[in-house]
Length: 128
Length: 192
Image (cartoon, rainbow over all chains, first blue to last red; front, side, top):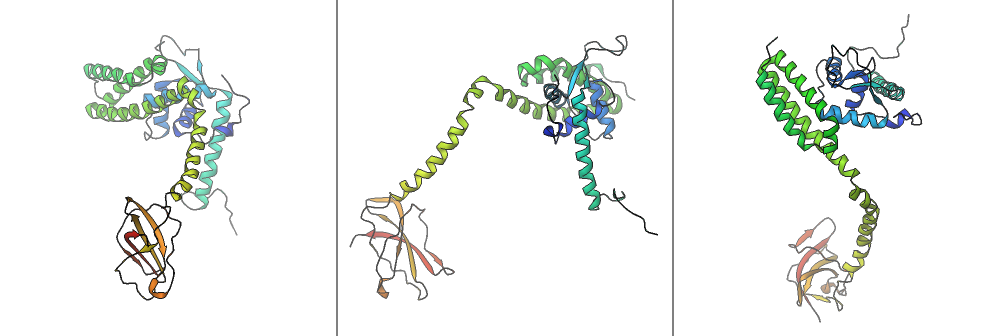
C-alpha cells in the first residue's frame, strides 16, 4: 500500500526505531534479523531493537506505506523460506530522505552553537 | 566464539513463546512466528559472542522490549476496538460536561452562604493597630461543618460589620498576614 498523496513531511519527526529501519532497508531488502543486525552495525552496537519493537514498527510502517513485503527470495537454498523480507517503497525513501535532511539541520544548528567538539562548522571561511 | 548451548536456546525460546501471549491475538498471529525466529537467531548470536553473559544480557533487553511493546500494541488495539470507537464521540461531550459543572458549581457554592448571614463575630484575639481589614471564617451553629468566610470591619473603630460573598473554605488556625494587614481567624457566628 503506497500513499503518493501523502507529504513525507507529515510523518516527521520519525521515531528512532522507524528511521533506523528505513536506513537498514535503504540499500536492499532484508528480513527481520537482517534489519536488526544492520541497525546494530550502523549504531556501533548501541541500538538493539527487540522483536516486539521491530515488528510493531514494521506493522505500522506497512500500514503507512513506508515499506512493503517482498515476494522474492535471494536464494531459497541459502535461506529459510519462512522468513519474510521487507523493502522500502518510493514513499518510504522520500520520508527517509526528508527525515535525514531534518536531522542534518538539527546537527547544523548544534555545530553552529559549538556543541559538537572536534567537528568543523558546516559554513566557514578562511581569511588570508 | 563460544559454542551455543542448544538446551539453553530451547528453554529461552520456549519462555519467549509463552511471553507472546501478552500481545494482542491479531498481532501474534501475523508476527508471532517471525518474532520467535528473530529471538532464536539473537539467542544463538548472543551465546556465540558472550556465552551465558550474552544470553542474560539478551534476556534483560528482551524483557524490556516485551513490556514496552505489549503496552503499545495493546493500547493501539484498544483504540481500534469497536466499543471504544463507538464511545469516541463521548470525549467532547465529557469535556463540555466538565466545563459546565465547573461553571455551575461557582454560583452553587456561593448560594451556600447562610440566608441571614453571620452578622457578628465575637473574638478575643487582639487586633493589631495596623490591621484595617478582618477576615474570619465561621460556621453557623446549626451547620457546624459548613465554614464560611466573612469580611468584618473592626467595631472598636466605629466600622460596620459586613458579610462578604462567602465561599466554603477549609477550617484552619488563626493566621496573621502581616504583608496584607489582615487577620484571619476562626470563630462561631452569632445573630445579633
